Length: 294
Image (cartoon, rainbow, N blue to C red):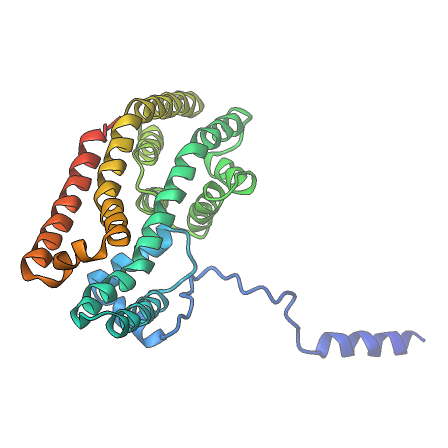
């Protein structure tokens, strides 16, 4: 009986070890494969491709540069062909194609802005959690891991990435600077600067984080008050931008013959082009006027 158990044990030991988990998580960062991996590698060699990759990362998207470029080209074709076939002016297909190609990039910019706004709103709670963990006796790196576990997206994933980077050997300074680059917010730069200065000169880090959280909340409160006071200006800008287009559509429905020279005659086309340029300038001008840095 003992010999049988010994033979069984030796057989188990001699068998090749099987992987304990099928999890793909590794220390080495892997690039996700997009629609055209060769295009991803080609784009990574140029500044524009790196900027696109950075925009995708800041937007919190899982797309790759090649996927975005393929979507852009597809939308450009899908928008340009109907415009060229259904209108009497084939040249209109060019601006239509440009507008269609820009849709994925505008979507990424919108996702980035929304994600950063959400991050900025949740950031004071993350600072409070860090401060409480440090006050309870945990190290700063351990406190970052607690924030990564407890906080919601996008705070949690960003702190998780920073925690993993410094946990796998990257210096804390470089990991924090990388997080500040991924999250280009003034509050994040304040946080990184405060932590790095405290690690060099010493001091009560929990008290520093409490003060920073209070400053961020006050700044966020003032920013919302500014948005309330500038609401009239924003509404005026939207009305002024929409009024010419709405009036043109209404006149085209009520009296089409009256609007035909505007589209058929050369001077009318030039007037439309000039109106579009001035509308664009007015939009950015109004947006600049009502923007108040806090």
